[in-house]
Length: 122
Image (cartoon, helix red, strand yellow):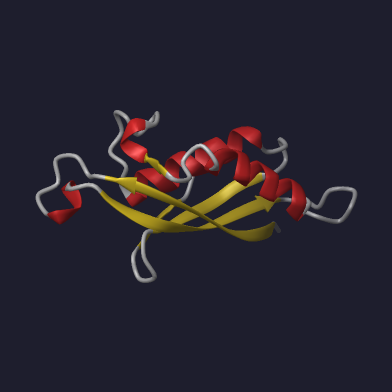
């Protein structure tokens, strides 16, 4: 048995895809929407996976360094191609580093548009 929370978050950022043959190799931006799923095997003493306030603070701390920037200029995307797949993975890993030990990232979906997104499952 496990519990799962879903938190929606967003940030705006520009990027260009390296080694891509098409219009996305040019600088362009997205209003990224994220579905962040956190899980735990048992609830904390307050009967929660994690307080939404605390979870949102962690997520905000991770996303603020990307919001309204050119992702290709910011580590790790200065060397890692800033695809939706890599954004989902990096965000998941950075959130996980800041969570209490009993809470895990179950998955992160990075939506670059209303119809196109990529999910990372650790």
